[in-house]
Length: 348
Ligand code: ASP
Image (cartoon, rainbow, N blue to C red):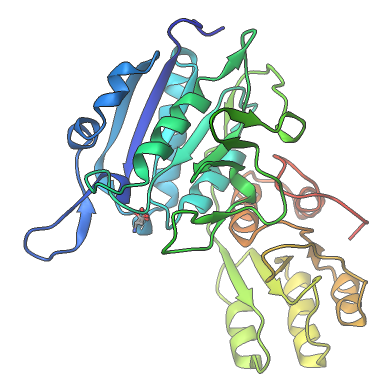
Protein backbone atom coordinates (compact mmCIF):
# COMPACT_ATOMS: atom_id res chain seq x y z
CA UNK A 1 0.00 0.00 0.00
CA UNK A 2 1.66 3.30 -1.01
CA UNK A 3 1.97 6.23 1.29
CA UNK A 4 -0.60 8.40 -0.50
CA UNK A 5 0.87 11.62 0.91
CA UNK A 6 4.32 10.79 -0.27
CA UNK A 7 4.43 8.00 -2.85
CA UNK A 8 7.80 6.78 -3.98
CA UNK A 9 9.24 6.12 -7.40
CA UNK A 10 12.54 4.69 -8.55
CA UNK A 11 13.83 6.31 -11.73
CA UNK A 12 16.06 3.89 -13.60
CA UNK A 13 18.30 5.72 -16.03
CA UNK A 14 19.67 3.62 -18.89
CA UNK A 15 20.72 6.41 -21.28
CA UNK A 16 19.08 7.70 -24.46
CA UNK A 17 18.57 11.16 -25.93
CA UNK A 18 16.75 12.46 -22.85
CA UNK A 19 20.04 12.80 -20.95
CA UNK A 20 22.44 13.29 -23.84
CA UNK A 21 24.82 16.17 -24.48
CA UNK A 22 26.80 17.08 -27.59
CA UNK A 23 30.31 15.69 -27.64
CA UNK A 24 32.66 18.66 -27.97
CA UNK A 25 34.97 16.82 -30.35
CA UNK A 26 32.64 14.83 -32.63
CA UNK A 27 29.54 17.02 -32.32
CA UNK A 28 27.45 13.84 -31.94
CA UNK A 29 25.00 13.25 -29.09
CA UNK A 30 26.18 10.91 -26.35
CA UNK A 31 24.69 9.85 -22.98
CA UNK A 32 25.56 11.94 -19.94
CA UNK A 33 25.20 11.42 -16.19
CA UNK A 34 22.11 11.46 -13.97
CA UNK A 35 23.16 14.54 -11.96
CA UNK A 36 23.28 16.57 -15.15
CA UNK A 37 19.84 15.29 -16.14
CA UNK A 38 18.41 15.91 -12.69
CA UNK A 39 19.74 19.50 -12.67
CA UNK A 40 17.68 20.22 -15.80
CA UNK A 41 14.56 19.35 -13.84
CA UNK A 42 14.37 21.53 -10.66
CA UNK A 43 10.60 21.06 -10.78
CA UNK A 44 11.10 17.46 -9.60
CA UNK A 45 11.77 18.88 -6.12
CA UNK A 46 8.19 20.19 -6.06
CA UNK A 47 6.48 16.91 -6.91
CA UNK A 48 4.69 15.35 -3.99
CA UNK A 49 6.63 12.14 -4.15
CA UNK A 50 9.94 10.65 -3.16
CA UNK A 51 12.17 10.21 -6.21
CA UNK A 52 15.21 7.98 -6.00
CA UNK A 53 17.40 7.04 -8.90
CA UNK A 54 19.42 4.13 -10.18
CA UNK A 55 21.81 4.92 -12.99
CA UNK A 56 23.35 2.29 -15.24
CA UNK A 57 27.08 2.49 -15.82
CA UNK A 58 27.89 2.93 -18.61
CA UNK A 59 24.81 4.72 -19.88
CA UNK A 60 23.99 3.69 -23.41
CA UNK A 61 22.40 4.85 -26.60
CA UNK A 62 19.59 2.32 -26.89
CA UNK A 63 21.00 1.06 -30.19
CA UNK A 64 23.50 -0.76 -27.95
CA UNK A 65 20.72 -2.50 -26.01
CA UNK A 66 21.15 -6.26 -25.53
CA UNK A 67 19.65 -9.19 -23.58
CA UNK A 68 22.14 -9.06 -20.70
CA UNK A 69 21.12 -5.44 -20.15
CA UNK A 70 17.46 -6.58 -20.08
CA UNK A 71 18.32 -9.04 -17.32
CA UNK A 72 20.13 -6.36 -15.31
CA UNK A 73 17.15 -4.06 -15.72
CA UNK A 74 14.73 -6.75 -14.52
CA UNK A 75 17.06 -7.42 -11.58
CA UNK A 76 17.04 -3.75 -10.53
CA UNK A 77 13.24 -3.78 -10.58
CA UNK A 78 13.09 -7.01 -8.59
CA UNK A 79 15.61 -5.86 -5.99
CA UNK A 80 13.68 -2.62 -5.42
CA UNK A 81 10.18 -3.95 -5.99
CA UNK A 82 8.96 -3.80 -2.40
CA UNK A 83 10.50 -0.40 -1.66
CA UNK A 84 8.75 1.68 -4.33
CA UNK A 85 5.23 2.31 -5.54
CA UNK A 86 6.31 2.49 -9.15
CA UNK A 87 9.22 2.61 -11.58
CA UNK A 88 10.14 5.01 -14.38
CA UNK A 89 12.69 3.75 -16.88
CA UNK A 90 14.51 6.43 -18.89
CA UNK A 91 15.51 4.76 -22.14
CA UNK A 92 16.46 5.75 -25.68
CA UNK A 93 13.55 5.72 -28.07
CA UNK A 94 15.23 3.64 -30.80
CA UNK A 95 14.80 0.28 -29.08
CA UNK A 96 12.39 1.25 -26.32
CA UNK A 97 9.58 -0.84 -27.82
CA UNK A 98 11.85 -3.93 -27.84
CA UNK A 99 13.06 -3.48 -24.25
CA UNK A 100 9.66 -2.60 -22.87
CA UNK A 101 8.03 -5.55 -24.70
CA UNK A 102 10.71 -7.89 -23.37
CA UNK A 103 10.30 -6.63 -19.82
CA UNK A 104 6.55 -7.20 -20.05
CA UNK A 105 7.29 -10.91 -20.56
CA UNK A 106 10.16 -11.15 -18.08
CA UNK A 107 8.18 -9.60 -15.21
CA UNK A 108 5.46 -12.15 -14.48
CA UNK A 109 2.81 -11.12 -11.92
CA UNK A 110 3.76 -7.47 -12.19
CA UNK A 111 1.47 -5.54 -9.88
CA UNK A 112 3.12 -2.13 -10.02
CA UNK A 113 3.60 0.43 -12.80
CA UNK A 114 6.80 0.24 -14.87
CA UNK A 115 6.69 3.28 -17.14
CA UNK A 116 9.23 3.69 -19.92
CA UNK A 117 9.90 7.14 -21.29
CA UNK A 118 12.56 9.21 -23.04
CA UNK A 119 12.58 12.06 -25.49
CA UNK A 120 13.34 13.17 -29.02
CA UNK A 121 15.28 16.23 -27.82
CA UNK A 122 17.72 16.18 -24.89
CA UNK A 123 16.62 17.67 -21.58
CA UNK A 124 19.22 20.43 -21.93
CA UNK A 125 17.52 21.76 -25.09
CA UNK A 126 14.94 24.47 -24.40
CA UNK A 127 12.21 22.91 -26.57
CA UNK A 128 12.75 19.44 -25.11
CA UNK A 129 9.84 17.03 -25.01
CA UNK A 130 11.62 15.19 -22.18
CA UNK A 131 10.34 17.37 -19.34
CA UNK A 132 6.66 16.63 -19.99
CA UNK A 133 7.29 12.97 -20.74
CA UNK A 134 9.26 12.58 -17.51
CA UNK A 135 6.79 14.38 -15.25
CA UNK A 136 3.76 12.57 -16.70
CA UNK A 137 5.57 9.24 -16.26
CA UNK A 138 6.28 9.94 -12.60
CA UNK A 139 2.67 10.91 -12.02
CA UNK A 140 1.44 7.72 -13.71
CA UNK A 141 3.97 5.51 -11.90
CA UNK A 142 2.68 6.80 -8.55
CA UNK A 143 -1.05 6.88 -9.37
CA UNK A 144 -2.90 4.66 -6.91
CA UNK A 145 -6.50 4.36 -5.84
CA UNK A 146 -7.35 2.72 -2.52
CA UNK A 147 -3.93 1.12 -2.39
CA UNK A 148 -4.09 -0.30 -5.90
CA UNK A 149 -2.02 1.06 -8.80
CA UNK A 150 -4.01 2.40 -11.71
CA UNK A 151 -1.59 0.95 -14.27
CA UNK A 152 0.03 -2.25 -12.96
CA UNK A 153 1.78 -3.08 -16.20
CA UNK A 154 4.79 -2.24 -18.37
CA UNK A 155 3.93 0.77 -20.49
CA UNK A 156 5.42 3.56 -22.59
CA UNK A 157 4.55 7.18 -21.85
CA UNK A 158 5.28 9.52 -24.72
CA UNK A 159 3.86 12.79 -26.02
CA UNK A 160 0.78 12.81 -23.80
CA UNK A 161 -0.16 9.20 -24.33
CA UNK A 162 0.36 6.06 -22.33
CA UNK A 163 0.58 2.86 -24.35
CA UNK A 164 0.82 -0.80 -23.41
CA UNK A 165 4.52 -1.53 -23.96
CA UNK A 166 4.12 -4.72 -25.97
CA UNK A 167 1.66 -3.05 -28.36
CA UNK A 168 3.95 -0.18 -29.25
CA UNK A 169 6.37 0.57 -32.08
CA UNK A 170 8.62 3.53 -32.80
CA UNK A 171 7.29 4.90 -36.06
CA UNK A 172 8.65 8.43 -36.25
CA UNK A 173 12.25 9.61 -35.90
CA UNK A 174 11.37 13.30 -36.23
CA UNK A 175 8.09 14.16 -34.51
CA UNK A 176 7.51 14.26 -30.79
CA UNK A 177 4.78 11.65 -31.12
CA UNK A 178 7.31 8.96 -31.92
CA UNK A 179 5.30 5.92 -30.87
CA UNK A 180 2.29 4.15 -32.28
CA UNK A 181 0.01 1.50 -30.88
CA UNK A 182 -1.88 0.55 -34.00
CA UNK A 183 -3.91 -2.26 -32.52
CA UNK A 184 -4.65 -1.21 -28.98
CA UNK A 185 -6.05 2.04 -27.57
CA UNK A 186 -3.95 4.24 -25.27
CA UNK A 187 -4.08 3.20 -21.62
CA UNK A 188 -4.24 6.86 -20.66
CA UNK A 189 -4.29 10.30 -22.26
CA UNK A 190 -2.47 13.19 -20.63
CA UNK A 191 -4.24 16.54 -20.82
CA UNK A 192 -5.30 18.90 -18.04
CA UNK A 193 -6.16 15.66 -16.28
CA UNK A 194 -4.69 12.23 -16.86
CA UNK A 195 -7.61 10.19 -18.15
CA UNK A 196 -7.16 6.47 -17.61
CA UNK A 197 -8.80 4.06 -20.03
CA UNK A 198 -9.54 1.65 -17.21
CA UNK A 199 -11.32 -1.03 -19.18
CA UNK A 200 -8.19 -1.53 -21.30
CA UNK A 201 -5.65 -1.70 -18.47
CA UNK A 202 -4.57 -5.09 -17.07
CA UNK A 203 -5.89 -5.86 -13.60
CA UNK A 204 -3.44 -6.66 -10.78
CA UNK A 205 -3.39 -10.33 -9.72
CA UNK A 206 -1.64 -9.67 -6.35
CA UNK A 207 0.67 -12.66 -6.84
CA UNK A 208 4.38 -12.58 -6.09
CA UNK A 209 6.58 -11.03 -8.78
CA UNK A 210 8.51 -13.65 -10.74
CA UNK A 211 11.43 -12.73 -12.98
CA UNK A 212 12.25 -14.82 -16.06
CA UNK A 213 15.90 -14.42 -16.96
CA UNK A 214 16.17 -17.02 -19.71
CA UNK A 215 16.40 -15.30 -23.07
CA UNK A 216 17.16 -17.34 -26.17
CA UNK A 217 18.44 -15.19 -29.03
CA UNK A 218 18.38 -17.93 -31.66
CA UNK A 219 15.68 -16.05 -33.53
CA UNK A 220 15.43 -14.10 -36.78
CA UNK A 221 13.04 -11.88 -38.72
CA UNK A 222 12.16 -12.87 -42.27
CA UNK A 223 10.42 -9.95 -43.98
CA UNK A 224 8.76 -10.88 -47.26
CA UNK A 225 8.94 -8.69 -50.36
CA UNK A 226 7.99 -9.33 -53.97
CA UNK A 227 11.03 -10.89 -55.60
CA UNK A 228 12.50 -12.39 -52.43
CA UNK A 229 14.84 -15.15 -53.58
CA UNK A 230 15.16 -18.79 -52.45
CA UNK A 231 18.71 -17.91 -51.45
CA UNK A 232 17.54 -15.25 -49.01
CA UNK A 233 14.71 -17.33 -47.53
CA UNK A 234 16.81 -20.49 -47.19
CA UNK A 235 19.81 -18.50 -45.97
CA UNK A 236 17.77 -17.29 -43.00
CA UNK A 237 15.94 -20.54 -42.31
CA UNK A 238 19.21 -22.49 -42.33
CA UNK A 239 21.06 -20.28 -39.86
CA UNK A 240 22.84 -22.63 -37.48
CA UNK A 241 21.03 -23.02 -34.17
CA UNK A 242 17.94 -21.12 -35.33
CA UNK A 243 14.87 -21.91 -33.23
CA UNK A 244 12.29 -19.27 -34.10
CA UNK A 245 11.44 -16.93 -36.97
CA UNK A 246 9.13 -13.97 -37.07
CA UNK A 247 7.71 -14.18 -40.58
CA UNK A 248 6.58 -10.68 -41.61
CA UNK A 249 3.86 -11.37 -44.13
CA UNK A 250 1.61 -9.15 -46.23
CA UNK A 251 -1.78 -7.80 -45.13
CA UNK A 252 -3.77 -10.28 -43.10
CA UNK A 253 -0.96 -12.86 -43.03
CA UNK A 254 -0.47 -13.64 -46.72
CA UNK A 255 2.62 -15.02 -48.42
CA UNK A 256 3.70 -16.24 -51.86
CA UNK A 257 2.22 -19.57 -52.93
CA UNK A 258 5.41 -20.66 -54.79
CA UNK A 259 6.17 -24.27 -54.00
CA UNK A 260 9.87 -23.57 -53.23
CA UNK A 261 8.78 -21.05 -50.59
CA UNK A 262 6.25 -23.34 -48.90
CA UNK A 263 8.74 -26.23 -49.00
CA UNK A 264 11.43 -24.12 -47.35
CA UNK A 265 9.09 -22.98 -44.55
CA UNK A 266 7.61 -26.47 -44.15
CA UNK A 267 11.07 -28.09 -43.85
CA UNK A 268 12.11 -25.52 -41.26
CA UNK A 269 9.02 -26.32 -39.18
CA UNK A 270 9.74 -30.05 -39.49
CA UNK A 271 13.23 -29.33 -38.09
CA UNK A 272 11.53 -27.80 -35.02
CA UNK A 273 11.82 -24.12 -35.93
CA UNK A 274 8.85 -22.00 -34.81
CA UNK A 275 7.50 -19.77 -37.56
CA UNK A 276 5.40 -16.92 -36.17
CA UNK A 277 3.24 -15.10 -38.70
CA UNK A 278 3.07 -11.33 -38.12
CA UNK A 279 1.68 -8.73 -40.49
CA UNK A 280 3.86 -6.00 -42.04
CA UNK A 281 0.93 -3.59 -41.57
CA UNK A 282 1.02 -1.15 -38.67
CA UNK A 283 -2.58 -1.98 -37.85
CA UNK A 284 -4.79 -5.02 -38.30
CA UNK A 285 -4.47 -8.73 -37.65
CA UNK A 286 -3.20 -11.94 -39.20
CA UNK A 287 -6.07 -14.18 -40.19
CA UNK A 288 -4.75 -17.41 -41.64
CA UNK A 289 -7.19 -18.84 -44.14
CA UNK A 290 -8.91 -15.57 -45.04
CA UNK A 291 -7.10 -15.60 -48.40
CA UNK A 292 -5.95 -18.53 -50.48
CA UNK A 293 -2.42 -17.12 -50.05
CA UNK A 294 -2.36 -17.98 -46.36
CA UNK A 295 -4.17 -21.31 -46.34
CA UNK A 296 -0.98 -23.30 -46.98
CA UNK A 297 0.90 -21.49 -44.22
CA UNK A 298 -1.63 -22.80 -41.72
CA UNK A 299 -1.47 -26.29 -43.20
CA UNK A 300 2.32 -26.57 -42.86
CA UNK A 301 2.30 -25.43 -39.24
CA UNK A 302 2.95 -21.68 -39.23
CA UNK A 303 1.56 -20.10 -36.05
CA UNK A 304 -0.55 -16.96 -36.44
CA UNK A 305 0.41 -14.00 -34.26
CA UNK A 306 -2.88 -12.14 -34.72
CA UNK A 307 -2.22 -8.41 -34.22
CA UNK A 308 1.10 -8.64 -32.38
CA UNK A 309 3.93 -6.26 -33.35
CA UNK A 310 7.23 -7.57 -34.72
CA UNK A 311 9.02 -6.16 -31.67
CA UNK A 312 6.73 -7.99 -29.30
CA UNK A 313 6.76 -11.18 -31.38
CA UNK A 314 10.57 -11.29 -31.24
CA UNK A 315 10.56 -10.69 -27.50
CA UNK A 316 7.90 -13.36 -26.97
CA UNK A 317 9.87 -15.92 -29.00
CA UNK A 318 13.10 -15.19 -27.11
CA UNK A 319 11.21 -15.42 -23.82
CA UNK A 320 9.34 -18.67 -24.59
CA UNK A 321 12.42 -20.33 -26.09
CA UNK A 322 14.35 -19.33 -22.96
CA UNK A 323 11.84 -21.05 -20.69
CA UNK A 324 12.84 -24.57 -21.65
CA UNK A 325 9.35 -25.58 -22.83
CA UNK A 326 8.70 -28.23 -25.45
CA UNK A 327 7.70 -27.26 -29.00
CA UNK A 328 4.03 -28.04 -28.49
CA UNK A 329 3.81 -25.83 -25.42
CA UNK A 330 5.63 -22.99 -27.20
CA UNK A 331 3.31 -23.17 -30.21
CA UNK A 332 0.27 -23.13 -27.95
CA UNK A 333 1.53 -20.08 -26.02
CA UNK A 334 2.47 -18.21 -29.22
CA UNK A 335 -1.21 -18.32 -30.13
CA UNK A 336 -2.35 -16.93 -26.78
CA UNK A 337 -2.16 -13.58 -25.07
CA UNK A 338 0.29 -13.80 -22.16
CA UNK A 339 0.61 -10.12 -21.23
CA UNK A 340 -2.05 -8.50 -23.39
CA UNK A 341 0.29 -8.46 -26.40
CA UNK A 342 -2.27 -9.75 -28.90
CA UNK A 343 -5.98 -10.05 -29.40
CA UNK A 344 -7.19 -13.52 -30.22
CA UNK A 345 -9.94 -13.28 -32.77
CA UNK A 346 -10.81 -16.26 -34.95
CA UNK A 347 -8.77 -19.44 -34.42
CA UNK A 348 -5.56 -19.05 -36.51
N1 ASP B 1 19.61 7.06 -30.39
C1 ASP B 1 18.79 7.43 -29.26
C2 ASP B 1 18.57 6.19 -28.41
O1 ASP B 1 17.76 5.38 -28.74
C3 ASP B 1 17.50 8.01 -29.72
C4 ASP B 1 16.58 8.49 -28.62
O2 ASP B 1 16.77 8.31 -27.45
O3 ASP B 1 15.56 9.12 -28.97
O4 ASP B 1 19.23 6.01 -27.43
